[in-house]
Image (tube, rainbow over all chains, first blue to last red):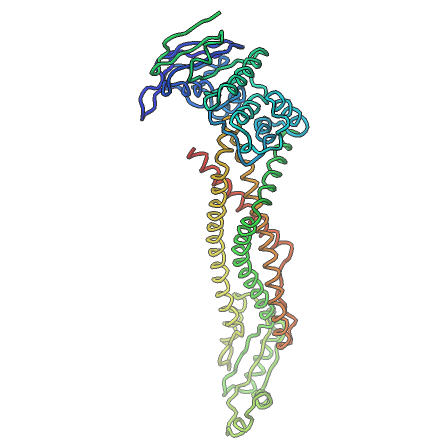
Length: 222
Length: 299
């Protein structure tokens, strides 16, 4: 469970990016964060993933206060999340297999067990036949799916995706949304930032809409 | 424990693989380390050997007691009895001035010149081998002999040895300072190389942190890198030192033979090489630790 209470994030250079946000996300929920670019979507996701800390207010992740967490405990909190970025952040000096294996080796899982899980993750995103390929040889959609395989390989409870379909054409985008829904159905909490509202409208999920750093609508479908 | 070992093995394998991929720069950096370490070690070994050599020379140290020209036979006898009673004298010989002149004529290339002298310029002398070679003991003995009747001068033959010894002491101090300075230079060079490596792997570090890597996970491969640089450099230094000493020894043995000595450059093999290797590894590790800590602080 993720709880935001009166959260404000201010950067010295650009003022308040987020102002007084309060909301909560239940375990197993699928939530979209929408808004124009610069509305603070990425900052919101960074606060959830404990990449940034709030200037005011509290962010609770499973009853852990992110602002008060020690530097030594932070890596272990981060392992609860699978992160997917618009620019993939793949490592181009190694093949697909080793890209996906990275979070496992961080968790101390290596060898056969790791190989089994890497292949399972690659299979899930339909890239099992590309395990030896270098990421640079993949198409944009394949690269994004590889990033998703990497995000889910260590079986995190929460998946956070920042504009995962931003650079993709509609066919690829639909593929990826289907993947996300499949993860959500097996109980993974999904938090997805979306630039274009069109994709989100077809879904029956909650939308957190940001406008200039404020939460304007909290649509509760279903 | 198994997991911990596994993570270390993984980091080490990763680094070895990377080193193999960039073998040229690896060879260059370990050569730099090796040469930088070998230079002060070589000077150190040479100084050590000079010390041993001097010690050997000191073994034949004597006190020369020259008598006054007007010293009587009674004086000589008195000194003889005095010397034979001294506990701190191992042995002594008396060389009368006639014998000394004869020896001089035998060894010089110009005996005519000496024969032309109308008077023996050499004094009667005692040559004493003391029991203790300690500088203080020799000095005490010297003063006690100086006061005897008929003694003109007492000379410690090892005075030059002591002076040389002092120079060598200064030399070994200098080599330590020189070594420390080079050590710092090495730390700077290795740190900088590892800093470059960190920059090359900037993205990997960033992504690893996002996926919950601990600081020690991120540090580990770079610490291995530094350690391996140190190990490689240390091995090169050992090989260089061995090779250079081997070359030197060829000439030294020849030179020593001219002096009818069996002196060769000695090196306490295992110890010196092990120290050098250990030092090199420590320097490598330290440099890596420094580089990665600075990068974590600045991030």
